[in-house]
Amino acid sequence: MKTDGTKYSNFSGWIDRPDDVRPALDGDLTCDIAVIGGGMGGMAAALRLAERDQDVVLLEAEFCGYGSASRNGGQIAGAPGGDLRMLSVQSPKKMPVMVKLAEHAGHYVEDLIKTHAIDCDYVPNGLVWGAVSPLMMLRVRTQAAVLRAFGGQGTVGSREELGLPAGFVGGMRESIGGMLNPGKLARGVRRALLASSAKVFEQSRVSDVRRTGRVVEITTPHGTVRADKVVLATSVYGGEWDITPKHLATPLYVIETESEPIAPERLAELDWTSRSGIITQHQLMTHYRLTERNTIVCGVRQAQRGQTYPLPDRVPDPRVVQDMGKDLARRFPSLSDVAIERAWGGWIGISPDWLAVAGQVGDNVFYSMACNGHGLCQVPYVAHQLADYIVDGEMSDDLAGIWSDAAKYSPSMALLMQPFVLRAIWGLDRLNDFFNGSKTLARRTRARRRGRRGNS
Ligand SMILES: Cc1cc2nc3c(=O)[nH]c(=O)nc-3n(C[C@H](O)[C@H](O)[C@H](O)COP(=O)(O)OP(=O)(O)OC[C@H]3O[C@@H](n4cnc5c(N)ncnc54)[C@H](O)[C@@H]3O)c2cc1C
Image 1 (cartoon, rainbow, N blue to C red):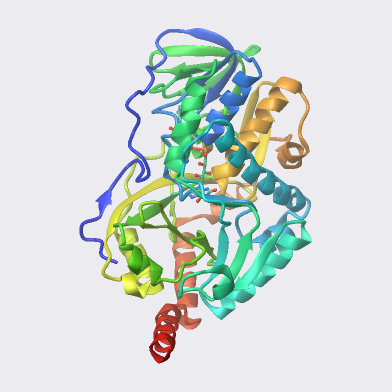
Image 2: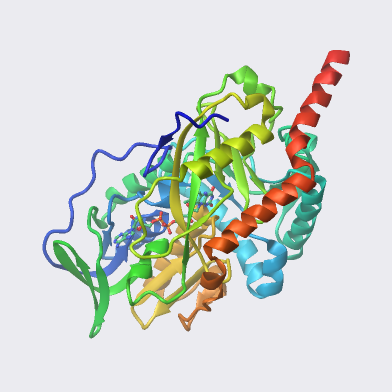
């Protein structure tokens, strides 16, 4: 696809910035619980704490929904992400919990949408783990077997059975979830939060979080909050502070591209009848989805490592966008003349074991990290559970299953995710594409189908 005229954004392609950004904290105040970060996690925690009649303050550096909340691919997953075969060997005890947690998280977001009447174009048509080659289909089948072994569900089928476009052999459809506009979702949750009793300060970048006696002191440019308890909900950004457990989140920058609107008859030619969002089973997945505005959004494929804090406010690298344009043209050959209209990106945090994690530092600082590219549902769900734990002192089974008492994490993920390793993973994926024929699959299938149509 063409990338000459692509517009690069340092926010999101899904929505515009809000025009009612709340004023910054100006002065000092005290509260029972302070939540730092207004992403899906921070907003869900603060909303739940307000629902439970707590005196809660939320501090957000820009505006609620500024981070990956509004930038992600909008794929609602009902199963854990990553390589399930590897995770089942690495964390066999956590796997059954993660499978249940992912399902509950999917339902939680569906309920959130209903409860707050959020118009976010949600289509519950199931996310598909797509295979672009017969070899990748083998991997899908093994992953599906692992998912089933740990109590999850998914339907394995061919391209025709799952209604996938010509560039795919088949895949596995998750039993829960689908796709939505994540910007509209974040905007709807922000609206619900602003209508609640929570005190929300936007444009209030926290520069330090430290314990003084029994309270936690949070510093912002124009004021300080003294709270009895604190929830760190800054995802990967929290690495700036000494209080954040070391190696909790390894920062990766990933991008999304969106095509120009495509004529309905050209989209119909793709035979993407289910319109389900697709995540490939490469080492580093690529995802493809259709939108309400008849565009194709494609994401990830390459990841770039964040090296220093604070993480830069950046735009996608044009070379990565070009690479994605080439991939789209291979996967959807009939659309090779279509332009990529815009590109944006965001930071995701990779947890030490690639699974959700939550815990406590001392008796009054709480954190959760449930991202790894599948955080759209898991992050707010875990934050909601964490809010209930703070109020009730009792943990749900899902929270207990991922809880870490020690707040100490292995540096192995941070050491592994080096730029040259990420580059090598990308190279391996491309090599696999080359040898397993996925480059030509889309072209051949389309030609075969045209031939059949011509004969009939
Ligand atoms: C490009 C992209 C595609 C993705 N696609 C999907 C997908 O399709 N499906 C899926 O399930 N997941 C996806 N994810 C992951 C998902 O979006 C995240 O896991 C989830 O949104 C993280 O939520 P969060 O609240 O933890 O973080 P964020 O939404 O990033 O929120 C963190 C907030 O903290 C604020 N903050 C930072 N520093 C400070 C400070 N010093 N003081 C105060 N506030 C601060 C930020 O401004 C931000 O608003 C994707 C992520 C990206 C980036």
